[in-house]
Length: 383
Ligand SMILES: Cc1cc2nc3c(=O)[nH]c(=O)nc-3n(C[C@H](O)[C@H](O)[C@H](O)COP(=O)(O)OP(=O)(O)OC[C@H]3O[C@@H](n4cnc5c(N)ncnc54)[C@H](O)[C@@H]3O)c2cc1C
Image 1 (cartoon, helix red, strand yellow):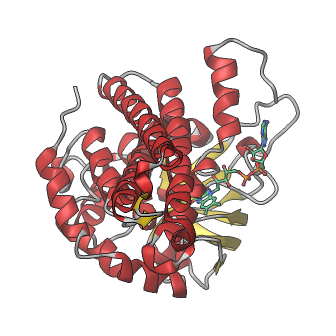
Image 2: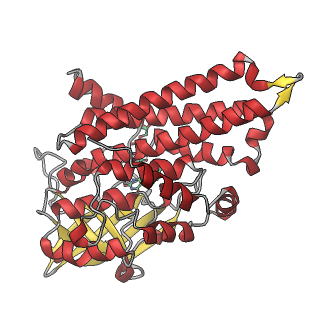
């Protein structure tokens, strides 16, 4: 049963308090990576909270990681720069060999190695992951990798990348999610040796990139788990990813609601606080209601996850409800602030842009609805 981790929440809030709006605004202007913030989180041990104690982490359950990420967002910071380290590591932990875990996990826990990059999405395949075209072909003790990924976030700020590539050619009659493998790419050796990373400028500061593989050689010993089973391994990590992103969205929604509530009490127009008008109150109350509903679904997904169940429906619903709640709260907050909502100095327009992402990534709302339609309601598969 998840606890509330109040001490952890307070400690995260204290650290985040040192990284206020001016810090994030400066980074946002330059599209720069929050190195100092990520280092502080790493040093405090919060990015390794899920790594077992025998590998140097805190060995805490997923609800502790959810508290960390929710609190980062609720204080106005942005965990998008490093959140993947928490869930990407899970693939290595669950499916890596003892030797791989012993080699990498302690260094990830100590911050000596960064595992921030997750290369799944490709420009032509998009959501249809089974159609990805990046290949890894065995040649002696190496895989030779060719292809391209897109939206590989944080690749420029990570030492390792967890890559999904096709190791068995797709032939007629074969399930297209078979023959894919997960390979750990050491990008320190790979850069300029067959790996090229190009940053993509986006509407928010997210350090995302496109990555090109041109005869990149990676030792076969970096294969995670069994060859050909990679899609299954990635899928098993997705519930954790969705629940953690949902927790971040709940944090964002809390930030917007608090900002709007304070402003609505202070700002006077027509000789009275704007918050006295129901046209201003009701959207705040509605955003609060939706945030609470999402928060409860996150808790339910965490409860089932920590019982060892496979809460695909709850993780997906939590992600959708929370992404909707955070974006609705963002919109409400801009409206409450009137013109000032658009001014950079209040951070609302920045957070508005940042939280918009979660309607699309790491899974778009349409695909969540398709999952629920097919797997929960038993409706015919739509694609
Ligand atoms: C800033 C950013 C960071 C990201 N970081 C990463 C990362 O680190 N690693 C990584 O691998 N990926 C990452 N992604 C990729 C992200 O997961 C995808 O963008 C997302 O899953 C949607 O896929 P797509 O962009 O290929 O859209 P497409 O698959 O091209 O779809 C376009 C639209 O059509 C809809 N659609 C497609 N098929 C269906 C269907 N059958 N039914 C209904 N609607 C459908 C989609 O929902 C979407 O709205 C990131 C994306 C962004 C924008």
